[in-house]
Image (cartoon, rainbow, N blue to C red; front, side):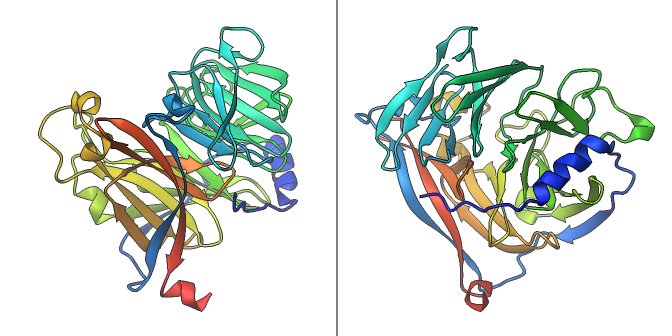
Length: 361
C-alpha cells in the first residue's frame, strides 16, 4: 500500500555531522521565489486510496479534523486523535485490528497523544508537553523520553532518528529550530543564530527530507527553509515565496479562519505542501463556527507541488475539502469531510502529476 521513498546511507553520515558540529544561521541566503505555477499544463490528480469513518464503521470514533495517520513498516495503519489516549490499529483495508494504550502515566499509557510516527524498528508516540514513548513493532514498551514541547509532526529517518521542528523548552534546546532525538533518547538541538541566541518560543513547523537535504516550513508562512546536511548541517537557503492565493487572506492573529500550512512531504515528483485557506463561500462569523459548522465550510484545501531544487511551484491543486495532514510512512495526503449531519470521514489521497512534466519523465 505505501509508496515509500527510501533513503540512502548518507543519513548515517548526517547524524554523525549533527552530533559533531553546532549549527548557526549565518550561512543562510534568502531567495525571493514567485509562487506562480511554472507548468501551465500540469495537473495534480488525487486518487482516493482508502476512506475511514462513518456511522457504523468500527473505530470511526477516532476520526476527526485533528486525526493523525501513519503507516508502519508492517503496513498497518495507525490512527490517533488528541482526545483519545489510544492508538487505533487498522489493516490496509481499513478494518480495525485493535487499540494500543490507555489513559494513565505508566509505561504504554498516555494522557494526550499529539501524533504517532514509525521507523524501521520503532513506533514513536508523541504527547503534548510530555515527550515521547518508544514502542517496538509488536507495541511493546521500550522507553519513555520526557521533554517539554508541543509537536504535531515529526520526520523519522531510516536510522530511527527523529527530526522535530519547533520549541523544546530547556536551556540546551530553547530557541533552536531543529531537534534530533535518537532511539536512546539523546536530544541534540540546532538552528539558533549563535550571535543572537533566542531563548523563547519557536513557531510550530513541519519538516520532510531526502538523503542529503531537509526542507522545513513554518505553519504561518509559505516560505521554505532548505537545510544542507553535509558536510556541515546548516540552513543553506530560505525560499521567500509569494503565493497570491495565500496572500489574499487576512493573516492577523485575530482572524479566523486564516491560512495555515498543514504539512509537507517529499516523493519522486517533488515537495508536496498541503495548506488550507478560508472557503470564500463560508458563512459569516467568528471562530465559534468551528464547533457548529462542517470543517469544509470553513476551509478549502490547497496543495503546491514544489521543485525541491529551486523552490518554484510546478503545479497547484485546489479542493473543497480541507486537508489535515500527510500519512507518514506513505506518500499520501489526508482530506477531511463531514457528511450526514456531521458524520466525519477522512480520505487517504495519493497525489500524482499528470500532463506537462509528467509526460516527459
